[in-house]
Image (cartoon, rainbow, N blue to C red; front, side, top):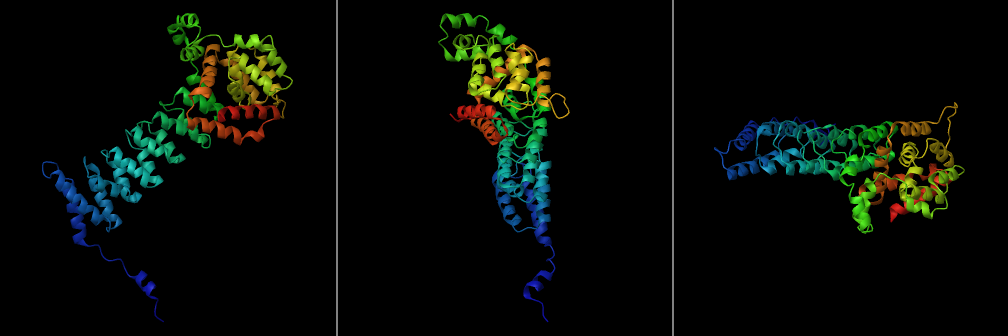
Amino acid sequence: MSEPAEQIELNQPEPAPSRARSTLLKRLADVVCLPSSRVNAFERAMTADLLVEMLREASESERERVARRLTGLVEAPGPLLRTLLRDQIEVAQHLLTECPHLNDVDLVDCVRTATPEHRRLIAQRRGLSETVSDSIIEFEEPSVIETLLRNEQARISHAGMESIVAGTRSDAHLVPVLLKRRELRPSHAYVLFWWADSEARRTILQRFAVTREILQEAAGDVFAIAATEGWQDPLARKALQFIERRQRNRAALEKSQFDSLESAVAAAQTGMSRELAEEISYLSGLKPMTGAKIFTDQGGESLAILCKSTGLPRAAIRAIWRGLRRAETDESGAIAPGLARALNTFDIIAVDKAQTVLRYWNWSLSSALTPVLLRAIREGDEGGIDQFSVPQRTAMLALSDELGR
């Protein structure tokens, strides 16, 4: 019985490589690699065009040899490079790992048209520009972004860092390496804080919780000037609110039903309501949105920052914790982990540093967030709302309403 035609075709051995083709590919690559003193730009471009046409039908081994030949070329024609960079990784890897002269245009083209493995090799390149890094980040591939973050020679833009920070909500393993990047700014770190684990939060507070002494010295006389003008300039007023030493809001106290912040906290001990949460926020010099974020945070550290910043005693942490209906002990009778972290944070952070953190939260949550970071906070809050108690849900809904405006 005769074999089917398709089977006969599959059983045929591959044709032997053409010696003429191999030799011609090598010679054309040699011409492309000649110095400018031997070949002008038009001759090089013409040769590259011919080489590109041949590479379309060449075998993988032939394309790989050409790619390897071009790794030392300083000014390879763009169409030829892009053809090889878009090739399968076995071919492109020689240029991506061994050619130091690839320009941003060719690298970005490769990022956008090739595979995750191509992007991973690009992320490892020395001296990677912000333009190329940002194009890699756009694909939101955790393993590739981790490679990029570990590349100390790569530069990442402010917007690129924001995208990575937002992505860490679902890819928490990126947080430790992200915290080591020199490009990370307080505006990034204090947003990252809200979904970071306890170890990362400790690192954020240690690295970014700084005093404002230098600002207070520089702007010491400006407070009097602003007061003379009746605090009419909103930009100056907002900046000075960040700088000043006093945290509590005296104007809010005059309008409050409570005679002090301590009284409001004592009232909240029996059950935190939306009204009490807003009142404590106002008395603490915070917007309700910032207060809601603190009261719904399960970690405990942010609550310690609030109490230390406003001069509340250590016992206020337990009072608010109890008002939020959170367990104070675990099953073994030991202090609950979240409460323990809150008390420990209260003990180790200085008042001025805690105020810096709190005011950065208040400032960033109300005015400095970009759409990327705003969306990351909002999506995380709304997605986890079912785990909160009734008072916490009330505060969370208040926060979501604020963020949605």
